[in-house]
Image (cartoon, rainbow, N blue to C red):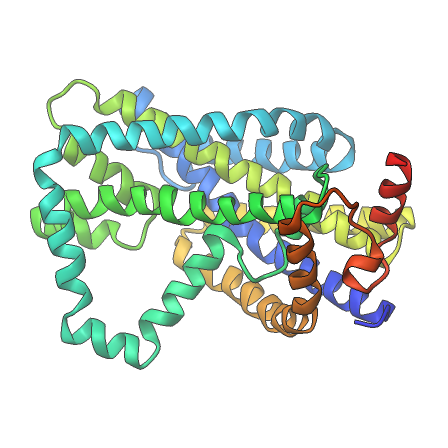
Length: 354
């Protein structure tokens, strides 16, 4: 963008806004997980205003504040190792459930393909209803095209920028095509809307309860219901909390692009830990459903996508040049000359290699 500082400042402000808007929904997800785990262990159902939820809210706000003001690097060192393990446990558990219910797999494909070509689906897609919903949930699963996942990508140590690009592409595949598809697999295989219509009406707007009810439906009388739902609930909660930590870290990275003055950085930390997280906590305890908090997240998604897409079009030629250089594999280092714009980091790295 021609080394215009205001572009970076503007995008940083928008990203901070996006990160903050996503925090309440993730706080809701943590509550859902804790509530589910407590119900499995005790066999009791807890109300939104119960002591369990009050303590969870206090711990969530306190823990997030602690990590935001000094302990963030310690927890990221743990989550870097924990997230892949959680993903493997989650996918392995879901695949096992699918194999135990292999007889319902034909129903899954029949329901998916049959539903895709109904008049409602065709006209919904034609008028943009299905497209809009797909884009919104797709962005929440992998952030492709938003420009936000570049925060974690840029923190990596790679020999060539396209190496990390390949990793990010693999991330999109794993997030959406593997993890999300497996989740949908379980919900469709259980088909609670026909097996238990009354339960479906109460669950269809809720994420974790619907998913756990589907799992329970697929493992009846096996004695593994509690263990499976406990594992899924714990993974779900840890995924949500690592998202909270990630959003606050990335918001701080964006804030440093605007100003490195300590008061401003503290302001951003306070905004996340002591404003938006408490807002999510109070939303849960007030009885607000997750669908309402998604609207806030969707607004942040929409704003940042509209700002990032023009940048993608402008910067595409540089990405193509970098890709051509990467594919040649002729041993020459990646430098500013390769793409035609200033890349100080890569120039210095090339000099270090000699």
